[in-house]
Image 1 (spheres, rainbow, N blue to C red):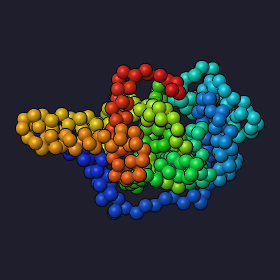
Image 2: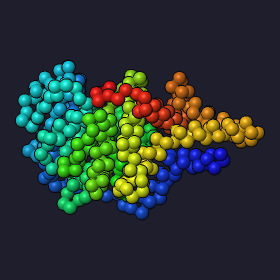
Image 3: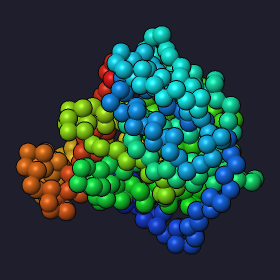
Image 4: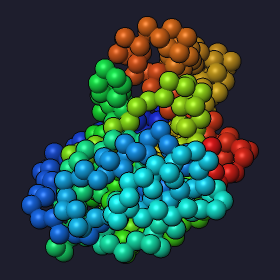
Length: 375
């Protein structure tokens, strides 16, 4: 029992502190170099799969048409997934030969739409975007720069930043900075085991059709590119600005669905976690898999600590009390939002929420409804 307790603590430590620390040490010996976007000669197809996006689609297409890139070298492929609002009418209203609109006759989900769009894509590069976010207009120029010459880059992602009407907010909190550091360092050292689905570019030749029920195409597609011997990079110069929803229930369900998608990818590709079985097995396990497993090890350590306490070892009770107090940070901050002004509570709340959503995502994967729609 004691061995399992120590192993659980070490696993949790490695997940949230040890792995980032290892990246930090390794990064010190590397110079961060971003490719210069001095040549813009790649053809690019921009792929947008939309369902009931009447509120966002006009602004999104206007944003894409304003990209700082030769107009004759890119086009926009819009897949409408059986919208029942004015999405199609708004897209058709642009009357531009740069826009290709395809309509599904039945609602089939984003993965199906991506497969359909890629059947129409002919450009050397494909830029995947979502309908909601505003993207900086340097996106095509700077992302395509990674594919110059004999580059072995297969995909490159921009950064997703949350902002409110008062300006950028959530994008500069501790957890966002923590995650950004990990992704940027993985990119410098080799590859990132995933991209931001709202803003990433891929070599068209590396795309493989994905299962229609795929939840996280932004993990599966880049990992497939890595399997082909290419690298996946991260470019902080390209930003997709998103606005967090005021609907707490909807945000909660979105996060749980993301975790559910991570479990789906993991269990369908367990060989990715075997050392040397995949070019990014170590990074994928350290960045993605350990976070899925961490809450289970935390619960195991709590149970073992309580058993130590029952056996007369007071340190067991002390550890259990400390862990429970830490876990209370998230519900306390939800109940009393003013507590978020304290940085330590804000950090604790973010990590507790991450692990809580991991558990809910696991439950949803095992027992939830397996839908291919946009819910």
